[in-house]
Length: 276
Image 1 (spheres, rainbow, N blue to C red):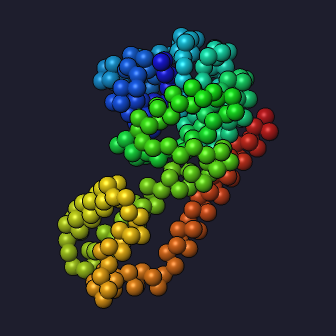
Image 2 (cartoon, rainbow, N blue to C red; image 1 turned 90 degrees about the vertical axis):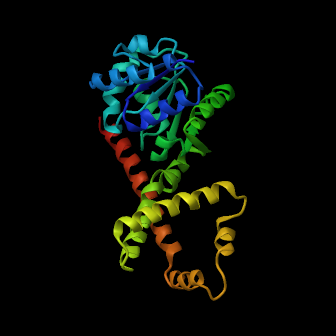
Image 3 (cartoon, rainbow, N blue to C red; image 1 turned 180 degrees about the horizontal axis):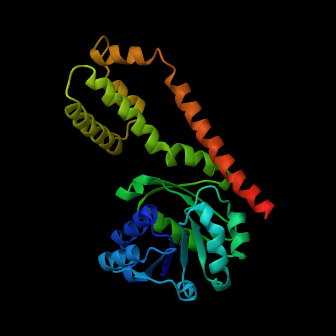
């Protein structure tokens, strides 16, 4: 299986590293390219035994899957460069936010299968929750192969393309929302008189431990919470205060704002295309 990556930034690196580590395909079957940073490509080639090239015809020849990891605003120029070299057996996987499948096909001047994936930064540690949508001409065997590739760096949530905005909000932006909550927890902890570094280290380990509890338990998060909440105890006292704030509404509004912004960005890209 030959896999090509257009773009070798942090997310692409997380993806092809996961694929290599999971042994889905051999490193020598992975080909990298980017716009101009050859030093980065050489570094990955030396460290991971992958290939790199700036020859689009050679890259796309016999390529089973082509990941497009360029910035959305660079895609039109990339499409112009590679469209003349696309082969019938190339299948495309877009990591770009906001660009619909039909837009990608139009710019590439191809009817070849296209999938869109929306990973998050947890791909760097093999735990991304990745939203994925397929074009209608993506066959079952090819879908299975793509899912195997995605499982190499986390879990999968397959949705219709119009629901990728929601996935972007919930899981794509999710790590940042949780980091923000953790920041506030650290800040509040230091106001109790403890040293900030001690509080930060303790809460870091608390988060890791709690995540492992969620991972290893069959119980819902609600039940896990109830299991450590004794009536009239310290946990109940703190939860009583939390319940006076409409935390669910805060998260609802945060997610809605992220969904709306994703829709706006997608519309902007389409509007720009209409103006050409």
